Image (cartoon, one colour):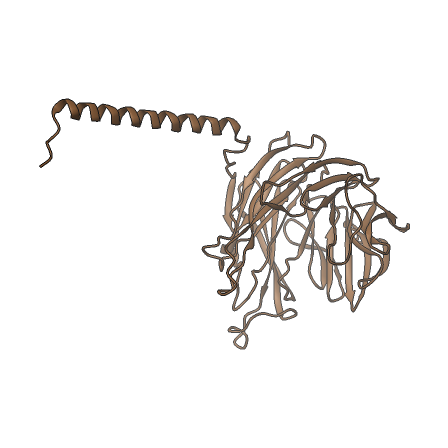
Length: 398
């Protein structure tokens, strides 16, 4: 039988245990302080001013047997109101157990939220053909905004009265300029696109042209005075003013030539500044001068920037690949949202960042979409995540 320890042995063991615990506690405190010293300024996540669940107004992300989520759009109406819009497929006895298809009967649903209180002010809907893509929203002066669906362009007041309306050809898309003063309307027919730039307040056509989607020149972005796209053979990044010829856009240190399997993505963040997307985001002027570059965190990828109409800032959403690869089980990684950051164009800095909830590999069937929009003055950021609208205050410095 082993001898029992005496009291002195027990005391020594207890003292050693206490010393070890104290040492580990000191090490933990040291590591915590070291991490805090190196952590970015936004390590403490911002708190929303308010939040409201859009699903209480009838939004359903997977209606009936839909295989894709119904997308939401969000935009500021001035700095005082926020509009949220989506398309809901009509439900009848004959289709209630069927997947909705493009062109089926549907309604575009619009809700206006008070920016200060976060309370609903008014909601309304109009008939429209069904599409999974969300309608485009554009804030206009004097508290009005545009909503573009597959077959109609409407200017609405903040109380959702129709101020002006224009029918559009089927398969039409609309894209606003960064300022929201102009709108690029593209109508597809076969391999031909009818393009026109319109004034958002008057609906006046400022420029129009035709493009062949299979070959030749192709517009991919625009501002109030410029177009950016592809031209030449082999294709390269090009730029032009309205009603002028394409000119190659050369940027030192950036490859602007491409083949059809690797198109360069680019968009405007204000009237004369472009964002070229590869692994990094490169900000350049319309004359090809590089301003600055933004690199994502390791194993992260950027989406294209979402500009504020002031032309002084933009939002970049960052994501990452999540999930395992198993061909036998038909499992593959997928893109999941991770963070949104607001950048200033003049100071080239980000002073605001927000952690996003992305789709989890543990529940991949629960797809979580994130949609962001900046207020005209850049002082607020609206975020819709998993059907919940939240408003954040953005520091003036950003």
